[in-house]
Image (tube, rainbow, N blue to C red):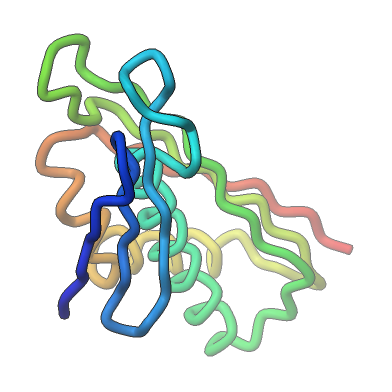
Length: 138
């Protein structure tokens, strides 16, 4: 896997992924950026949410769970000093569907965090990651 990141002036960089997608990254104006895109650490949290969300959706589909919606929300805390790595990450799944069983959701999240989501496996080396879920059966 590879990415190419090109400087676009000041602190803005455009990343192009191996799959051909672009992401513009930037910093806050008070540190020299122009706020044209997300910060790299924000994108890391997006990666975690996307990785675990894809896992959970896929696992629940294999269990024939009838989902209407799945939302992943993340709140994180960073170290006070540089490098400001994540020290705590809280992952919340909000799931709506028909006859969604809690044991299926718990199993899907456990498989994601312990086996399939490479992003969470890497992040848990530095950060305490907690998972919780809310289920609304329609």
